[in-house]
Amino acid sequence: MRGRAHPQPCHRLTDAMFAPLSRRRRVLPGFGLTLGCTLVYLSLLILLPLSGLAVKASQLSFAELWEVASGERAWASYRITFGAAFLAATINACFGLIVAWVLVRYPFPGRRAIDALVDLPFALPTAVAGITLATLYAGNGWIGRHLEPLGVKIAFTPLGIVVALTFISLPFVVRTLQPVIEDIEPEVEEAAASLGASRWQTFLRVLLPGIFPALLTGFTLAFSRAIGEYGSVIFIAGNMPLISEITPLLIISKLEQYDVVGATALAMVMLSISFVMLLAVNALQWWAANRHRPGAAGSGR
Image 1: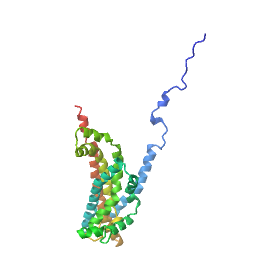
Image 2 (image 1 turned 135 degrees about the vertical axis):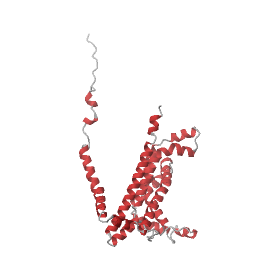
Image 3 (image 1 turned 90 degrees about the horizontal axis):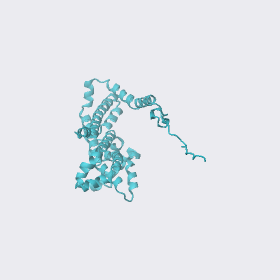
Image 4 (image 1 turned 180 degrees about the horizontal axis):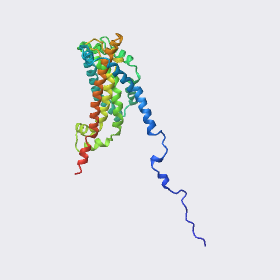
């Protein structure tokens, strides 16, 4: 009588199947080649233009540079440019959070259409946006005709600049917040409510800590976009020196007068202020992302 044959496995697991990923063939080239491409690309697009700007500005002495950059008209343009950009980014940080929350958490008819409208400032030419806003908010416009009798004048004032910058920078906040809000489970809010937390406490202590880094990133993107905006602003600002003239327009005016060195000096001031502000915001983002780590390390003691 023959013995029963034992079934043999068709495949045998070997150590080769669990080879480390470093030994496998990569889809993209190695680190050296990709780093080289990255440095060349960034150099051509960013480093070389900024270096050229610095070299051009170095033709002026510090006294001459300070004289151009600290004139009364220049200071007024700085206040309007950075003040309006900060105010527009702050408005979008508040209402952009509401828009992103509604689009993520509440299903309603027409949600896809509204979600598509958020990206309209990306696709719409800035000059078209400026002409449209100026037409709407002018004294005889659809909206301006109702606001002007109340003493609210938007078009051709600094308030019109804020409206234009708010319009073009809204998508940066909404699109930055949407993925983060989608990752927050609704059960988190239900758990907070079951423990007796009010809606305001749930927002401040449960939701905001997770949303804050993305909110700060959206604020930074909106602020950066608003600082450099030109096309939509010049049609609604009025462009009056010392009142509603932005720094990019002042730079264009100097270029039209063939004052290249003066325009370069203003551009260097804008670049320096923007760089310092971005460093400050990035430091704040780093602090917001790592503020719980030391406490978590020492909590087990």
